[in-house]
Length: 338
Image (cartoon, rainbow, N blue to C red; front, side, top):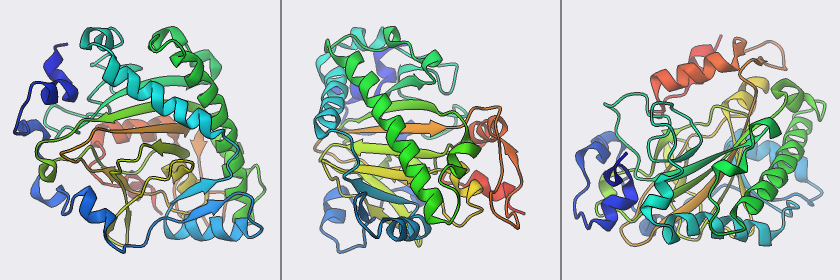
């Protein structure tokens, strides 16, 4: 695979115009840039302190109204969050392209581990995202092979392993709290999901010469159970609320929680998965790190509440449908509604 297949290479080659395969159709282009959105008085996803007495009520409100929220007092050392951002950025900015390509993922597989730029692309006709990424398979432990991850900087693999374990613990804690906030047994959602299949995706969004034409990540909802995300201070993540795109302002010490499709099914639609996307900017590169927690593909997911509003679905079939249709901002959940 040549250098030209990576977005970072396009920028380093000094291109002043976005190649046509990255140009979004007019209806999906961002209407305003990051700087304009930062200066607006839009509502923003709530910040929830996990030590607050009214925690369950706050969680319930956030899950109903947003499907996404920041958490603080989350128990993960800020030093570890900083280290994860540091090693992620170092791979993209301090490695040669040949070094990065030595970890290239299998371009014929839509979700293979490694370094790439075309994750979950269903066909060659799809508009491409303005980002490069490194995807790590981290849980169950049987999937975790640090030899497939960068060895530079030297502590990269150690940081990713420690970060993986901390995110796993936090995801379990959050699902228990979310279950409780709905009046369900604390173990309800996690029992329905089963053992976590965890991936950690470091996304790198180079500066874009025409940010008004592109998206760093197309509109979609995540298809697993729960996603935990950290980002740098540049900004670019947006969530959809009432038909409007709302910028998620970066909070260095917080972790951003995104409910995914299987949690919406298990909660019978009481709590919604969050549609989100990433916009680009012309001045600064941006880094985000998303940790996905999904069921095994053999698990059958169904509502835990009566009467059910969604048909049961085998998770592997749901994922296959997502790959076939592509993200496109469409909610694959709609096809399961009764």
